[in-house]
Length: 185
Image 1: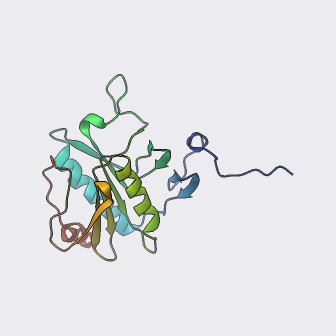
Image 2: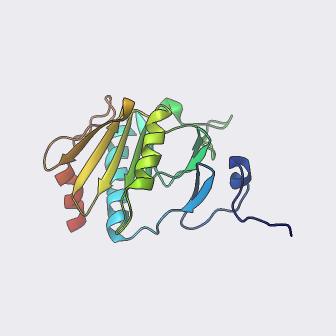
Image 3: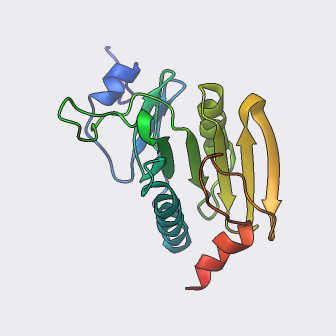
């Protein structure tokens, strides 16, 4: 009997499959689907992208993309927010933003959903750092904390009013309190 598998065997096979909602990711040879975003997740994602792009876009420093598929280092991941420095944003020959991003973000952000284990999002963020990202954040709305990950897998937990790390050339001052206060629209 021939056994067929619904799991693609390679990254190339995965990338040929139709997109899913919510997005699916290919990590360590396995496909997993992201949790469906809920209210808190959506507010945090929207407000954080707005804050990043308000600070970064006018001077063409960087741009934050929501739910952008990034293919690099033998994985296909979809960070909740992928921030790319302006000069690293892939472009078409005509200068438009390309549809395919085949590189790590400079700054990757994941937001935990209710009852979601930290393992998979943390694994994705560590992979980003290992592949060259400068910064990663894991937001935990329940604990109102943000775990920042730096090169060489150095980590620091932020909560309260302590300023959060951002890309060095970005004039953006935020704390965990600022971010989680957005949940009280």
